[in-house]
Amino acid sequence: MTETSASSKSDPIAAGASRGVLTRAFPWIVLAIVLVMTIMPIFSLIAGSFSLSRLPNDFSFENLGLANFYAVWVEQRIDKVLWTTLIYVAGSTIFGVSVAVILAWLVERSDMPGKMWIYAGVPLAIAVPGILHSITWVLLMSPRSGFINRGWMYLWDTKVPLFDIYTMSGLIFAEGLRLVPVAFLMLVPLLRSMDPALEEAAATNGAGPLRATRRVTLMLMLPGLAAITIFQAITALENFEIPGILGLPVGLHVFSTRVFNIIDNVGTIPAFGQANAAALFYLVIALITSFFYIRLVRHSERYAVITGKGYTPRQVRLRGWRYVALSGALLFLFLTIVLPFLVMLYVSLINYMRQPSWEAVQSFSFQHYEKVFNQPRAQKVLWNTIYMTLLTATAVTVLSFIIAYIIVRTRFVARYALDMLSFLPHSIPGIVLGLALFWLLLQFDIMTGASTFGSIYALVFGFTVLFIAYGVRAMSTALIQIHADLEDAAKLCGAPPWRVATRVFVPLLLPTIVGIWIYCALLSVRFISLPLILSQGGDNEVLGVMIWYLWDNGNISSVGAIGVGLMLFMFCLALVLRFVGFGRQRNVGAAI
Image (cartoon, rainbow, N blue to C red; front, side):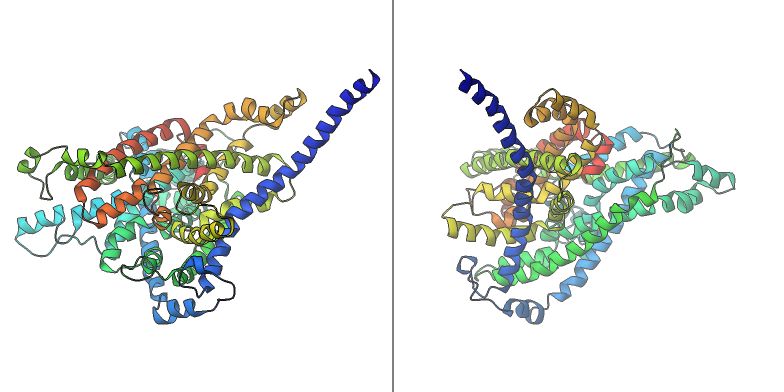
């Protein structure tokens, strides 16, 4: 009886000790996982760039050299791509941020009518995948077959197109429009939270509305605007879809398309080592740009413009320009949301490619929808996309909560290193990460006998690495807003960590959790650069890759049919995201 009593008393002590060891070890385990997720792909990219083996599965540390760097820099002169990339990134960023500043100012600081609809509509442009956005402009502005250009040449009896989308100007225009929604979401809270006292002081001293805006509002916004501009420059540098559709056909390369082109030459063995050497320089540029972004954001407290006083943002009266401003805002919504959907719908319903006309409308049919969605390939791809999206969004959300909790709520000695490591993947372009994982997963399978390469789980792992920075930033900001007393009270009542998470944090963080999940789902469907590198046929082919190859093979109507269905689905996700999750501005800014 005495022995039984003693053992029952010692068991809780032993259990408590084991839980204590696990609690202390758990942050180190998470750090090790994040370290593997972020550093190992970069290491494989570096090792592959020195590999002299023709194929990644022949890699050996005994066969290393500088031949790939010589081929890329001396023979192919990839440094020339640096100039075109600089023009493309700078031009699209300036154009996109400028449009976003105007829209955000009109919504927050002017008396423009219909502001609520513009505020609700601009974020919906996120739902249009970049590949469909760029295909839309090809169908409209291709110099020989674009609907608008052909109509222009017929109307004015000329052979000169109105605008050639296959130019640097076309790339800047298309990418700039695509950058606007995210920049708008970041700028709105910046303008909304700015104390108008200085603007009112400028008005008292005789400054007109435009001068006060230029000399006061923009100057106060400058630090935040600089951070947003650098962020958007990183985004433009990483994006592949626009330059891939508009630049590759005419040999107009930026770094992302040049890396892809090296391994996508038809009829020759892909030069994987050379692609790694080029991607390594691409990665260095992205890392340097991200360094300046992090440094600027970390010192943001120096530029605080919010006081403790209550205030109402000052509204500028536009007078006769009110409806002109509204027309401009509606034009943006038409170009980025309505027009792509209408173009995809039109090409999906016509029998063959021809100019829009009443005769074409009369021939509308759903034959292309039946043809596409009755194919076993399409059904397999659709299931792959849904499965990959569910796993990716869930993995990012759970991992983001764990990392953010360790960073915000614990005194873990390496929490700042964990914070930096979790942000590092944002600096890795999708095409570069895809190439790095190509090498890493092949070597992993050779050493372990596993079959991760070519599986859907390779895409899930890649997207989880790619999106973790978004999730951790949003979750960290939300956790900071929850007082530690709630967690402490649950612990004092004997609740284990998992119960604290499910009964305290999940209900309070639900909008953020839903927002992160849907936002990552949107991104995993939108991104095609990483799946293009890792896709190995039907087992892990997703919709973005299918659309790319259908377009490359000239199946435009099939692209339209898939595009319409995909855009409707994405619009529904974006609406839920807008009103349930990141519709709350504090979470939007953190997520982006």
